[in-house]
Length: 94
Image (cartoon, rainbow, N blue to C red; front, side, top):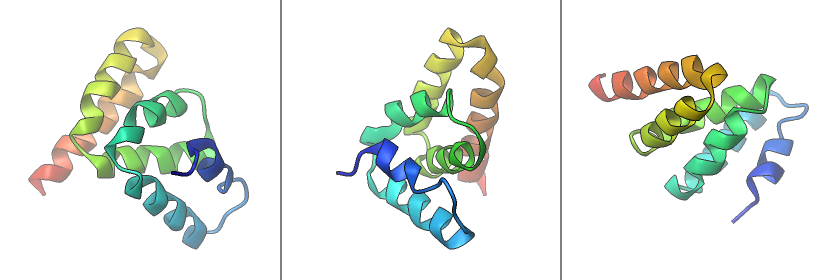
């Protein structure tokens, strides 16, 4: 399995095709990477943050618990977690 940081480093200077490839690569790593993605989401910015957020949304319900736990521990992250949880729950209804 690729290291998440290595995968995210591919996003330094990317076009949309590369961005999509990296997002798909992260999703293909499966739910075991969710805790690390939630940790990364709290510290990264820019394109990397967007890709990690979309990956968590695509991984779905398994992300919710980790997002809730992170929001409890990090008040600055609370709004991000709440937004992503709404997106996850909304994408199931669609």
